[in-house]
Image (cartoon, rainbow, N blue to C red; front, side, top):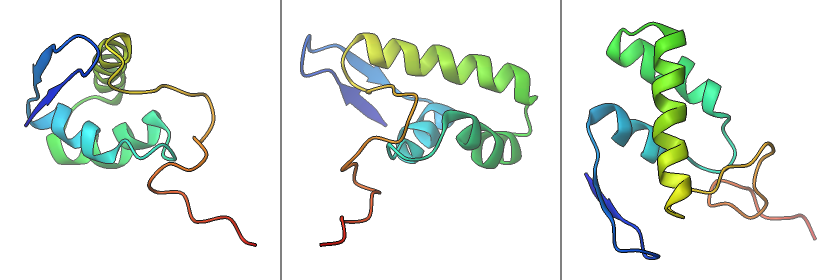
Length: 85
């Protein structure tokens, strides 16, 4: 998978692990849950190392404005249910 930063036209070619992270980044699921439920079981890696690697990847994408990092779920993200009226 390839993604591009609209801000600076930087291309990123994602490996299998990065692709799983990218696809799971829904604005609602904590990064630690993505690592524990998707990365570790699928790729049989140590959770500590996987967590550090994924955080580094997410930080790099964040610096290019490709991913928004938040301590809380992001309102109105694609995975968020619509507000009750």
